[in-house]
Length: 355
Image (tube, rainbow, N blue to C red; front, side, top):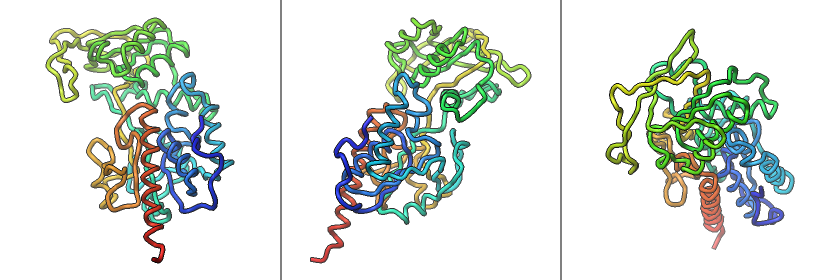
């Protein structure tokens, strides 16, 4: 996977310094573009290995780790990119999934002062909860937590496994739900259920992916939503679901699931995985003064058409701007934001030249 695909080496001496926060697809693609334009780039990431969710969440049969590391190694060896890993960049206080892997913290405002430009590409590292009674049981987890744990073990960064792994229920119909269900099957779970509140035609992951899992033995249940978790001695023993029917379209344009009274049923489980979406995690908390106003209630950073926070040397791209999306979209955003950073810094250089 080549991130610096526009050149073979950095052209000439470094022009100016850029900090990239987040080493997922948006951050790495932006880094590759910027080094080819002659900038010195430092990358910061709270995880101990670059790649973001490509490394720590997406199954390796989709994106091999060797492919990611090949591109990262090239950025290091040929373009002198400095990777500051296990380092969380933050302004204010907030805690997200994967933060326990960071051993160092850096103030965002100090980075902004110390670099000519800063690109935020921190993605979506906070999961939505089921929001039903019992969802705090110790064997109820998010898809991101589940996949992160598996990859940590695979990478030799954690010794313990998740625990009992016989009957798994995954709630959701997106790609994270697909990945969690498929990993469960591949790692030996005896029964895996994938339960979605709409039909297979509305599943965000697509009908093809769902049917592929069904052929692998995953039990697909549609038009059902969790109502409560059955908890015994602090652990989930099953989920109570309620049947749904499709009503009028909601704000997304998809038919709204409507509960059917008296239609409850229970599925036994020793592992419950909530895969109902992730939330953007910018390095800007509510205590971050004037910058906080650029973060919406949904966590997304508000930028102008040039991917820039107005009046600042701060840019943002990828899922932290759009919300959860596919890798190709994040890569495209990273490249476009890098081009805007190049324009911004080039204009500053020209403005400083005596006429």
